[in-house]
Amino acid sequence: MKHLQDHPTVKSFYERARSSAPPATLEADWLRQLCLEAGAHDAGFVEIERPELAGERTDILKLLPATKTLVSLVCRMNREPIRSAVSSVANAEFRRVTGDVNEAAARVVGALEAKGLNAVNAAAGFPMEASRFPGGKLWTVSHKPVAVAAGLGKMGIHRNVIHPRFGSFILLGTVLLEARVSEYSAPLDYNPCLECKLCVAACPTGAIAADGTFDFSACITHNCREFLGGFTDWVRVIADSKSARDYRSKVTASESASMWQSLSFGANYKAAYCLSVCPAGEDVIPPYLMDRPAFLRDIVKPAAR
Image 1: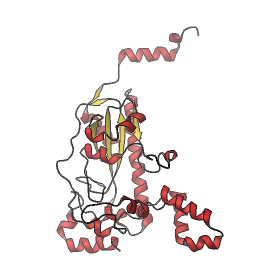
Image 2: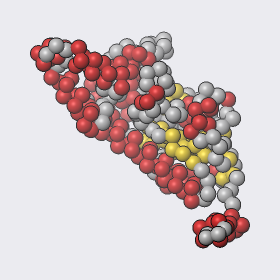
Image 3: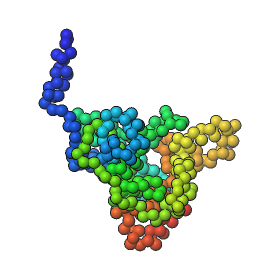
Image 4: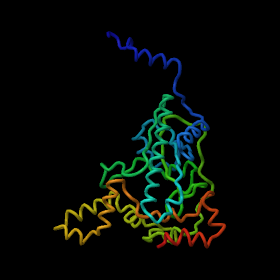
């Protein structure tokens, strides 16, 4: 073929370009409905220039340089599995909903691509950019500040986003989009956190203090024991052990089995007690208000063991 413009694919492109162009601005109602139909339980939209995203902007634009809008997605978790004292039950729920978030984001991205718009799912879940370890930022976009800016909740004293309806029982995702949206979301004008301090009582490491201070290191060392930091510690123990007997003197059989479980089926959280006892959110709060002693006995006390 002598001329590129004579190729059928090239001809088809120019015919489509003449007949329709991708919209520069999307209707907010249409985009929200798309997110809900894709599987999200709530969604909000934030413009790239929003001051709250200043610390994230460089990484956002590396991922999609043409980003103009961030779509924040919320997927609800079932409460009772997260409250379960059986860790495998709670972790199965975390992994299920993490998959739901990424699946919903993928559907949104696919629908936007069909309209000729570039979009990217800034993946939910860990691990992410492990090649940046050590010393680098291991995630692409911080979903929490995006969700707060999008009016999908506020940070509680347990340092998780609390949705006004679903409370702490949510996972978050973010889609980057090259188009504008007709109407952007505003942050909530109140914090759903009740400041009841039940998360303080339930935290097994004292990471959440009664005065609101937070010890991130204590939280991640315990809760994410089998994620990257804990895994590298475990490998170091193996390498430093002189024999199998020496290894068994340093690592219990249950710890070894738990690490195997994480490597086989996905990393397990060691505690989600701060989420499980949180009574905030319109769908969550009724038992707390109707029978507080029963709430403390049946939900808080088992977690604060």
